[in-house]
Image (cartoon, rainbow, N blue to C red; front, side, top):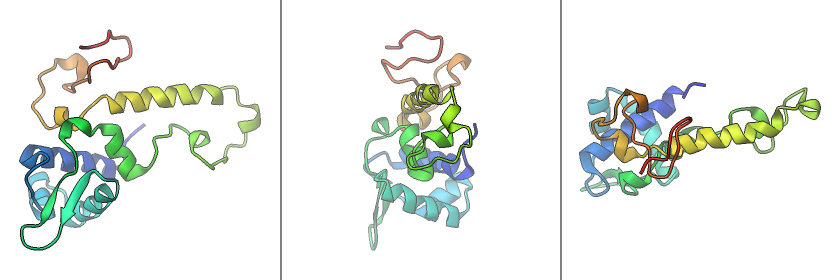
Length: 160
């Protein structure tokens, strides 16, 4: 499984926005493009998607710009990925209204995909934008990402 480039760029852009202004200050798409190295048209496209999903707020005119719609600690990876790619679904049989699988009627694995899908989504939801926009403090076992209190990593105890 791999994130699309747009989802990856959205995470980079929101991390930069969290570092630069948190939920209070404002910046613009040009500043984000310069800081991240992501082309301006791509930043503008993502700003539109992220704004539509309620993750950032935009204001036109003098004193305008963009800012996070919520504090970074309340925005997580699942929120960002779903804003760009839609609902997280490991297989097409988990997507609402899609039945493209030729073995769906006899599939013995399908009932288990929702469990796997929930585990993946929960793992993404456990990583906050605040943790991604700070310098890693955790060791290599967590890959530098902060796991929210009460969330489990596969094979790990609950972190508090």
